[in-house]
Image (cartoon, rainbow, N blue to C red; front, side):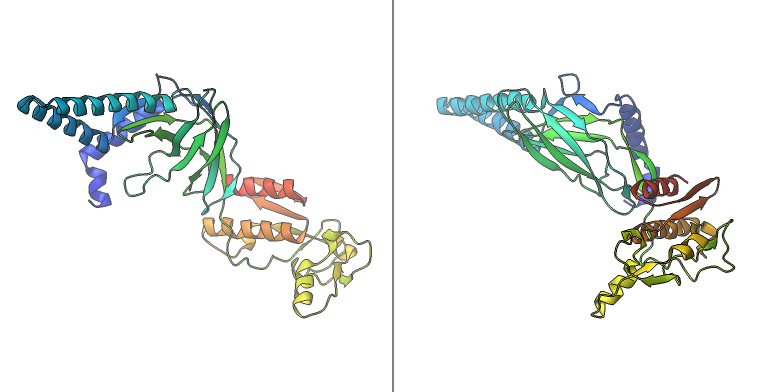
Length: 334
């Protein structure tokens, strides 16, 4: 069925509407305790086949008065009933806790760390977690684990968002089919946490734009480019590492020399690096954001002071991990 046909299929529309209504009724919480009220159970395909086999064995035993047939039928039925109880108890009583997700770049998969805790005196086997609602064409990517007795374990659940910005963690599902695989026990969970998705940086990263004269500076012209400072000098012992031009150092090492150069502090004081969408030379808004992201990462890697101008926001020049994170958050949410 094509995507357009699926969009107008009444059953598909009804199914999606029911799923949205039902998921909206689930509470938002980063910690979920599994009880009889939120754990569900149904036979699997193998379970239905076992039920059909038991029915055939029972009819044949009645028809031919086979005592051994009765024995086999009731032994298998009793095993199935015990398996159903063990399967439901394997998930019931677990505590699921979602750790705060770290920001990541668009185009890469992020992994949510979920901690499973059990107070039961026996281990729990074959517990799986995945993102719910991936669609029929994209199968669930299950993360399987065993939970030790009166202990805890962690699993990584992968999620790949399709756009930048702040996203709520998708609905997760946990299930088990232990011990016989004849029953499927599952639950749904809506975490309250949100994950920030940074824009994907442009690759390969273009050169940084030229620096701008400071308002109180004495320079009369722009530098040729922050990534290629004209105001450099030979490295002196005691120079801060942030003043070392690492790009030139890498080129020197590649040619077999170990000459290090540092930025001229006086030259750096006359110019400052501003990252602005107007200086990207691109018309597409998302392409501009991608290039600015690449510039932020490049300037941070070189240890430069840089500022960011965005519509309605301006981040003053600075450096360091906190400044990089602040600029990336502004790019993700602009």
